[in-house]
Picture (cartoon, one colour):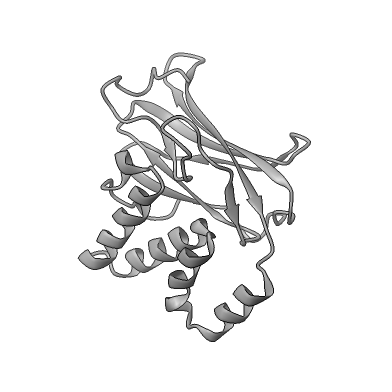
Length: 189
């Protein structure tokens, strides 16, 4: 990555994906056909952000320009329902980049995401819980992304709830995202 748009003493551009260690992240696993990807965007001088999702044959599945000025914090990037759904079992590559004014370069991060089917026990458990309580089940099953997404939705509905914010920080800390755990969660783009 090249950090021309981001001051070198800033935290780096970071996808909210569990880390194996400080330098290696896991593939993000999701149940969602149209997931929301969360990205930490530091203070920057970029003119735009760009999100690109490619399938396993490197064909662009979804692409979106995202305004990033004055958006330091964690931003949700929703893959709209009018786009093709992620296929179960296929690995997708995602890239988020910042374009710098006056240069052809910028900074970018890449990661991967894979949609899986829930096992029958999980499906049954989810059907027995209310929408607002489902995030509690996700943490017990390793479907980390759904827990993150459900908790983000609860925080968006209750932005002053300190208990939810504490759970959010604990969740991010639990998967090696300590550097961005206290950053603000911004509204949808």
